[in-house]
Length: 182
Image (tube, rainbow, N blue to C red; front, side, top):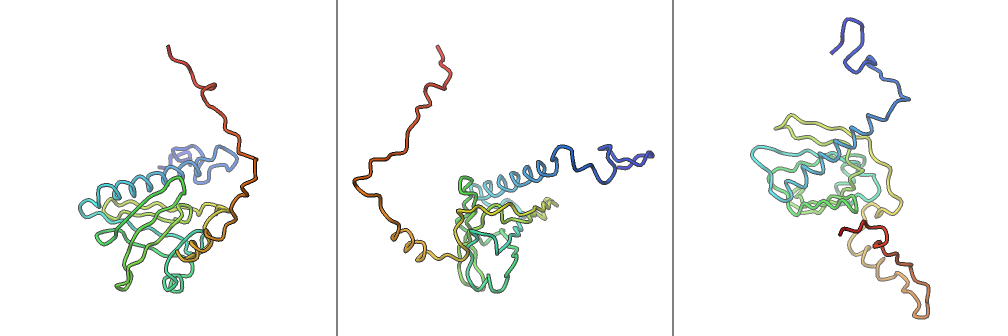
């Protein structure tokens, strides 16, 4: 709402100064968490009522795994719909990925979507739409379109540590840092 003095409720007009606190980033982070919570909710409880989720993500983002035919059809970005016909929805916040089973043209597929690749989330029933800037790609992400066979082959060819290696990763006990309760 704009007041008669030409300023809106935040006191900065339409363009707040860029050198203040990063509120936009904090808000976007909060909206991402709402998106994750909504996905976790339907993974556990199913999709309620007439709700449906539209999830838009970058197909070029490192770690995205989708069928080659979808990648060819949607070389930059795709929107998937989660409503009645999806399965095995899993959200792994440690790896920052979503995996979900969907059918495209009668062919079942599992999609792996890094959370940072998501550019929009919508629930039309709730009249809710979030748009996001893509997050920077992690360096260790799985290459695009890596198949299970390629993953298995890569794992099988990893070098094993020599039996004579004595260098170990140090283990630090956290007990010394914990508060003691009487």
